Image (tube, rainbow, N blue to C red; front, top):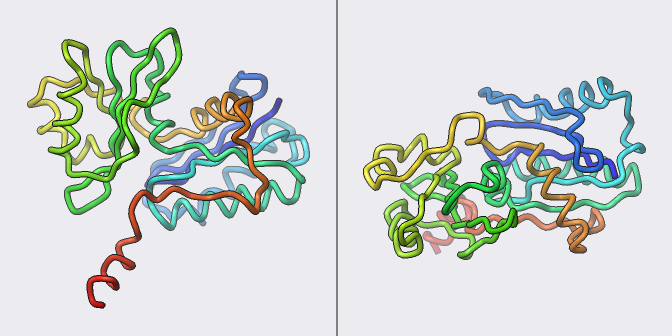
Amino acid sequence: MTILAIETSALSASVAVVRDEKLLGEFFVDLKMTHSQTIMPMLDRLLAALELTCKDVDLFAVSSGPGSFTGLRIGAATAQGFAFAANKSIVPVSTLDVLAYNVINASGFVVPIMDAKRDQVYSAVYSYEGGRMTRLTDYMAEGINDIIKITNELKKDKNVIFTGDGVDVHVERILSEGFIIAPPHLSRQRAASVAALAVHYAIEGKAVNPENLALSYIRKPQAEQALEGKC
């Protein structure tokens, strides 16, 4: 099975192709450019480098949130366009699952955090047992102190690894608790992890028709929250 994955949930953007659980190629950039500028050129170059077309892809995968509302919509629209053209399905993959999967088989707990502004982060707590990733909490949008409190209540005597772009914002607070921080190459959302998880999620029956793709924002867009506050 050949899977093409797209990841545009935050500042970084990436695309990847996995075939039979083997990574064939990945393009990743972390620049202050809009995803509408970067994602299609990366897809074109990756497919050309691998001598593939969208019709050679068996399944498409996309990071489905949480994250940047605009970025998620760009990724979703791109995946839907490719899937419609190829008459194939899409696997939505949680962005937090993607970050946790970057450090698969870590000892103890993994806590991905994504900066959600206003001193909040998107997060969840994960553990690995027998090579299987298990999410222990709901997906959350909470203050960093609340996430740390929840983590401390769960961790007992195990190690805790924090990863994600939210670490950049809250690094001092995280280190003050004695938690471990994932290395830079594991601390960003990667399309390769989206594709790898999509392999398993497809087997679990989580692939959907392109028109049925749904994004998971966890909380309402800031503009919508501000409008409600005025009513």
